[in-house]
Length: 354
Image 1 (spheres, rainbow, N blue to C red):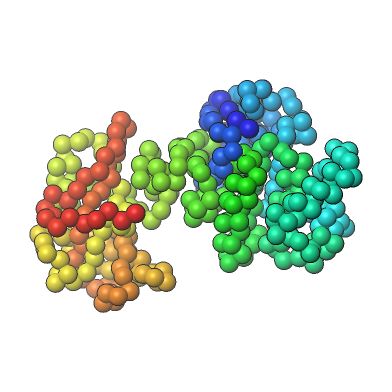
Image 2 (tube, rainbow, N blue to C red):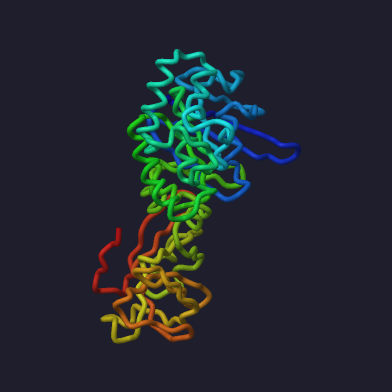
């Protein structure tokens, strides 16, 4: 299903929850709707589903205006974070529920349900009740039930929020593969950046009711279009006076700029670890966070606290230790443009980490 939203607005009393939001979604794409709490994500999802009516704007599915259509006529499948399974029904009956409402034939219901049970990895569980399943299994039932009536659009409201971290990680890969196999256009709301980046074909980032940016995870990470997106996605530091740092004096030529410095743009260590000391800044280690394969280091450089990575194979730093900090590059942007700038004092180029 091709989805087109134009100038969507929604108020709840005096609160303007969704502000003039517009976007398109191509058929078969999996979209991650990301943003802080209260940003408007769930309100957009509920308006697409027909559970809330927009104050103004248009929602079109395949070119058809659906603003006045009730939820059951929109071809929508909905998966909630709390599963919303019928406790008194077996797995089979939960999945079959929507097909029975549509009065499908018994033969069609059985074939469709058993196909979905196999597709979602629930074979052997069809006669169990929800309380006899794990959280991950219950969520798979919820997905199967939503897919059973063959919806044109699948809406997922934080589908993994109630599942523990290990199972959530497994379900991410499973969900992406499932959606690709089924080919249904899907939108899922999440607070989890890693989840959105790993699963989605495209990400839409919302903040204070507005759509800040829409694009692939790679584009949004490498080319943020607003200060909010720059600081919201990934570990990074937003700097207003990049020209005060060594090697970036040429930035003075560009007025009204801000700089984004990501951890992979920075190197940290003792003096003997650098070939060009003149290109480095003096820093103080403020925090160390163990990340399994590396350290995430917070280092104070002048008025800024930067974040960078440190290999476990290198000498371990200490909180309070004085270190040298080499900022290899920064991402600059203003209201009209964005570009990368390299440290002008550095002579040994650092490979870009992807």
